[in-house]
Structure formats: C-alpha cells, structure tokens
Image 1 (cartoon, rainbow, N blue to C red):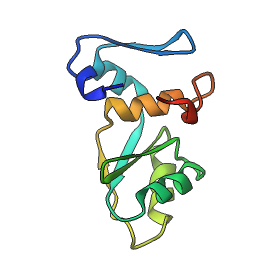
Image 2 (tube, rainbow, N blue to C red):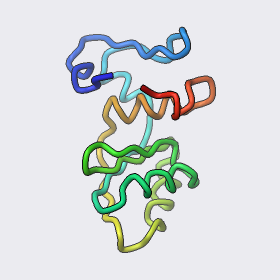
Image 3 (cartoon, rainbow, N blue to C red):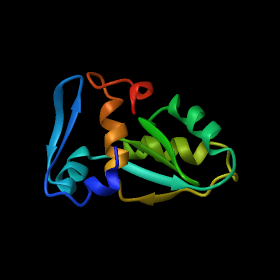
Image 4 (tube, helix red, strand yellow):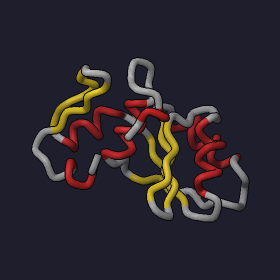
Length: 119
C-alpha cells in the first residue's frame, strides 16, 4: 500500500477480508477516524512501538523511517500513556493523522485484520 499516492486520490476504499472498512475522500476518511496522533524520534523506535502497542489508549504504533507514530481514539488516555512512557527519552508532538495512521488504526479494530496481517 502506498498511502502517499492514495492521499492524492479523489476517493479511496479500505478493504479487509473482502469487506469495505471505510470509503470516501481521503480527507474525510482521516477526519472520520477521530483519532489523536503523536510522533517522536529517537533510538530503538521499533522496540518502543512494540511496547506501546500493549499500553492503555494506544491503538496503533508504527515506525515510519526515523519517526514513531502512535494513535488512539481516546486522546487524553493516549497522552497520559505516552507522557509516562520512558520519561525524558522521547519528546512527543501532536500531529494530524495521515492515511497510514488511519489504515493501521482501522485494521487493528475488532472486525478488521490483525495488525500482524498488514502488508
């Protein structure tokens, strides 16, 4: 999946196990996901992402190059979790969710594919 290309489309459709998960204009899909997203840089990001996925409020954690993104539906809980995660090691910044964040978030929900099944 090339979400940077999908962001330039007029309409997208996310499919999982042969069913439509969500469809619409990219900006509408992102807005409709209603997720809070934060990012950070640092060392051992893959390890941090694995640990964060098991923590309260973290519905998605993924590394994009040298940046770790976390997302969740409960923004306040997500913020408390990341603020308490390895204090002083990471500087978190809230960012607008991207299609990639939404894709990971949606496929990790009940009824979607499991995160390990993502291409």
